[in-house]
Image (cartoon, rainbow, N blue to C red; front, side, top):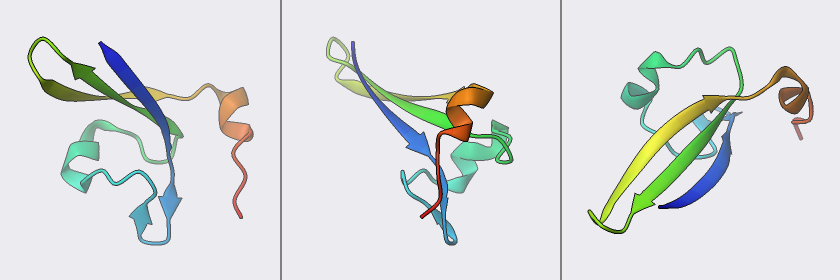
Length: 64
């Protein structure tokens, strides 16, 4: 399974990694998350998972 990992962060009124808001309903948007895009070549399908970033990793993200 191939995995692509991206940081999810707010950019104005949208998010940098474009994820529709209905998919984010289970995430606490006050916390930082990574988005994992996983491709299963056997099924030819993409899956999206969210992982909460550790506090030390979240502090490393700086706003521009």
